Length: 165
Image 1: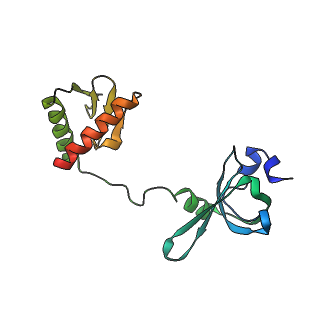
Image 2: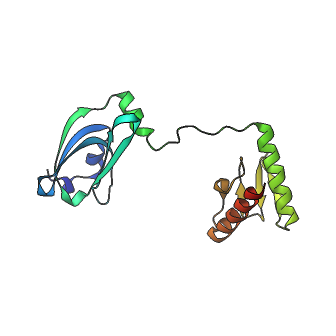
Image 3: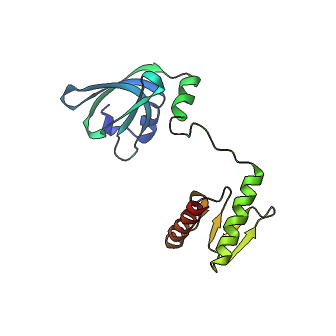
């Protein structure tokens, strides 16, 4: 069956498999299928090269003529593919560091007349003006709000505060 005529569920069966893709002008690409876009039918291939590096290639769905499965991925391969875009090491902070950072940010917000309260049973979440929350470790990326304007402005303020501390 033609690639573009398949359903997203059929495309999903190619995930975590090594394939050879024949595209327009008889170009051939080989790699492990990370995913297939359910709208465009684009195929995302990963190839593991030297030094632990990975080459990612996207083959446009409209250009795909044939996909041949070369090898099924085992559990180790599936995990390797699943972890490709995960951080290599997650930062861990001491409780003392997190507490100091929270206190510093809370004090700074109060000094600048920005209403802030501690929320939750443990008081680890800061709530700003009732519309934005900040989770540990209290950086701009830890802010949450449905109001994008407030979110963006407060993230900028926190970034400038952290740059000075």
